[in-house]
Amino acid sequence: MPAWFYILRLQSGSLYPGATTDLKQRYKEHCAKRACRTTTLDPPIALVYSEEYETFSEARRREAQVKRWSRTKKEALVAGDLIT
View (spheres, rainbow, N blue to C red):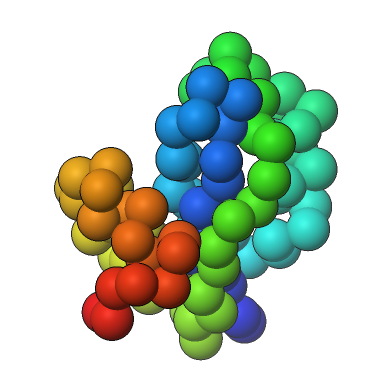
């Protein structure tokens, strides 16, 4: 079953990385403030990046990796200036 790693830009300008098996549905949940505390308090304004994986566990590993990155490195990934 395919899965996605994704990054949202939030109203505050922050970047929120996540993983899901249904990208459209998860984005709707974030926008409806039903997905997690972070996006309930700071709603998304755009889905700015995504990568498709064969399994959810691969997408979660990528999420964990990117969550440890600096904001600068995440911004470079979103801008396409980072080869990973």
